[in-house]
Amino acid sequence: MSRQTKRKLRQLKQSIYIVCEGTNTERIYFERIAQENDVFEKYAITVYPSEEDQIKASKKEGESIKTDAVNLVKLAKQEIKNYDEVWAVFDKDGYTKHEKAFDDAQKHGIKLGFSSIAFEHWILLHYEQNRTDFHKSQNVIDYLKDSGYFTAYSKKANIPIYDKLKDLTKTAIENAAWLRREMANNLAACDDKIYELNPYTTVDELVIKLLGLNQVTYGYIKESLRISDFSITVNDVHRHCGITLSVCIVNHGKCSYLVNKLCDHFYLKDEAQNTFQLVIDTPIIIEPSLTQDIALELEIFSATGKLRLHFSPEPNKILIIALHNITDIMSD
Figure: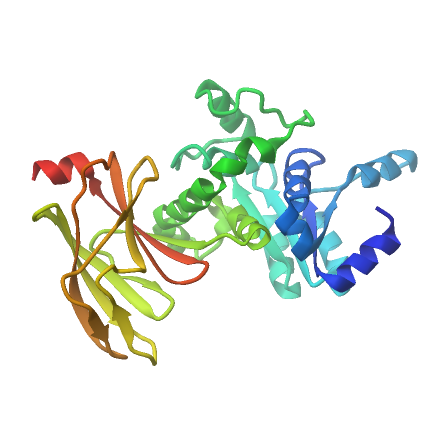
């Protein structure tokens, strides 16, 4: 695609510039996402270093593609005036100057898709919840292969990474939210310097942006969790003609909130991603600044494994609360 054509597209769509560490894995992943019909119709995306960028650099004596974190942010900074949004995608593996990269990015409004220890941990989250502090990217790659998740994976090969992972993207986003919840205390202990953590990722934030998927907040039973204008606490899960969830809702907004009998914004999911509708006996209106305890009920006959409560009070935002294993609940 010529520069003139790219410029015209950027005038019609929101333009996004993504600079990536390395010349294969991340670049190939985001170039393929950019080709998705819904993404292409909405965004004009440029990913660096493209194959064209690499060819040009190889023909110039003494010039090479520099994709370390500091140089990526420097490249991104040069494009801020040419695009609506600029991202730098890099990981922690084998690099030490992340503090400067993060500081420069924040100073100039550059968004970061960061992974620790490596981008491969984002790939691993498509398959499982994992908070192992791998020492380098090859350790994650070995785990992906040994587990049978992605046996053909290679940093050097030109393989269709996104095509392999596409159907698991929502799982990866949920697991990335889970990982951030798991690492919350560690993050606080290092003054919110995410580049000091292992593992960690924010790649999901860019993927959510491009694919228009739901932002996920993750928590646990008995925690007070805020999403939009509401705080939600699941205080108990017990058997009572099926399963009953004792839930406390605080309405922080300026409008009344209706919980109708079918509980449209609440539902359960099990380990196999089956969805179950929750109900209450009587509709309840929660006025602004008030707190209300409600009992969400469900008769479950086919749920398997771990249960999670989903609460989605508005489009594109979901709160997920991890509950008990269904076997444990039914044996209480």
